Amino acid sequence: MADKKDQGAGIKGYGGDSVDTVISVDAVTREAEKIASEAPSEEDLRGLAGEDPFLVIKNLRAGYGRMEILHDFSLYVGKGQTLCLIGPNGAGKSTVLHSIFGFTNIMDGHISVGDRDVTALSSNEKLMHAGIAYILQDNSVFPDMTVEENLWMGGFLKDDPAEAKQAAERVFDKYKRLAERRHHPARVLSGGERRMLEISRALVMDPEVLLVDEPSIGLEPRYIDMVFEILKDLHETEGKTIIMVEQNARKGLEFSDVGYVLVSGQLVKAGDGDDLLADPDVGRLFLGG
Image (cartoon, rainbow, N blue to C red):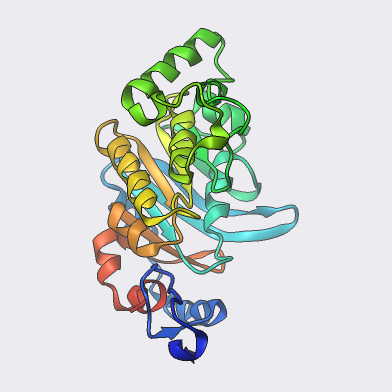
């Protein structure tokens, strides 16, 4: 570990707060593996999800091609809950979201939403029939299309294009900031407005589950707060179930009902968001103190 003053000012920890020492990703992984003996049981995970888990992953082995990233991974989230996945780079957090949405090779295990097994469904089928929407961490707006046209694209699976236009109007009613820019090309939007558009486009299909990958990445602090306010509203007002990967572990856990800590493709710790914020191991490894 190196002294902050030797590395230059402004170095940040996993949680986004300034720290006195910098821990490398490899060191974090080694330290986190030491707490794996405390990994939660299936009963613990079910308890965190409430009486009736809504989205369930059981004993999942998944990856890309022949490379297995997730090893015997399980997850339980209740309807209307928010869950944040944290851990070092390469832990498999985004692979969890990819697996739920159908972007990985699933080698074993299953995924269900409600009473339906969705493991083998395509991404389009999961969006259209299982109510699962995925919000990418990368900039995914169509820059030369207008804001309105971007929203229409969110309804590309609808049988009637008019339904997508009606859904877009509901978005404009909800978010005046986008309504004021409806005829502007998306390339003129600020980073925060683009993220708002990406989230809003996912809402056109009226999903029950939102998979949100790194919502704060690349954004200024004021826009990060705006994006989390949008997600909070979707959770509290519309009852959306949200599973999130967030680089700013503190922000993600403050937002979420439940947090999971992943290391090397395995779940090593889980708990209420507030409990993980107070956990000394989580604080030392991921929150910068």
